[in-house]
Length: 483
Image (cartoon, rainbow, N blue to C red; front, side, top):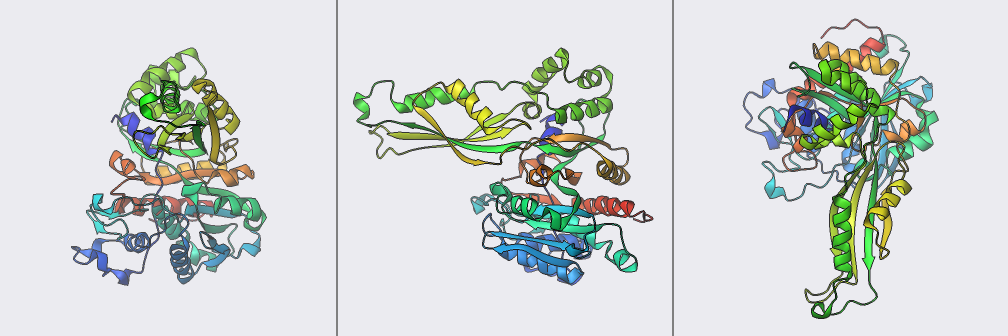
């Protein structure tokens, strides 16, 4: 995979989690570790957190664990909802009732299923610490990010006791992100915006990569997401009144209609669309790339640019994700009872990711036009109702950029469209500035582990991420930096 491919895929990353007291060095699952004195507290906290399974719909135990750790650290915990499968809480340095403008760090408690545990190097819900990494489901997506956020907020607690700070700072932990956010961030943003009084929300999103193939020199580039694609999950269904024996079936049976229709759909190249978010991204990236290529990238509405995207996307398909809607066939099903019996119903399941400004109706009409089959019907399984306009980079973007450049010397920072979906969208719809940032470098191995076997996060990522967000907060409070 090329450097460009790694960078673009790297924007799909979501990361890092909370931390235990130093006297927990003897966690059972990590007994026998060599020189445990060099393993930071944050890694043990994350290990313990990962060891609590919290597959979407079963977040409560992990949420209570996390809330208890926040209370022990001195944060003020407020449960917004506390229902089975929909537990959402805030942990703040000041009471939410203070009305202070609020810097909100958002993360999600839920994880996707682990799959076949025998395919993991270490049990997925053990939280194994090995090889300078924390292993397990959720280590990268998204429990790890909560650790970085937690310790960063904890770093200013003493300062808040010394004097009245201009901002409240809140750790917001939500449910159900992996299943569209309807049980988590959607509830909080729509019903409790005034309670939180958010000045900015910072959630999961972009990250840092090295060796971008388009650059003329080795450099670190961070993407801070200012918008995300919206998810649209569809079920395409072909039905027939009668099934019948396969030996007497004509070629126009619904299985053949299904195959032919899907073949047309998956082999249709999606049209390139330049959104305001990708325009900002490419202009910023072009400045860093330089040369002729950089000049082309700085003019994303030019004819040459579209030819450039078409050329590079052949070797780097992830590039295409920034400029097109995406349709992924994720599964099929039929009601055939026997191999010699035709199905009377057969279905395809599509995971569609929509660019900002594209609606469900737009995508459904596009699909129906390509398939062109009157026997097919479309059912919407889940839709986030549109991602809306992205956040225009402003004061808090610049402060995040400065914090990244302080920790990662010589790094470049660009605004970007996150080519997957995230629950950042819910506060953004309410008019709140929202950014997505996993504040550390990632590589291909980490990226490929997302929603896959052998998920992990490097312990170094925890340390550097904490430093980035701690600098960010102290910079906002006009404090002297001492790291």
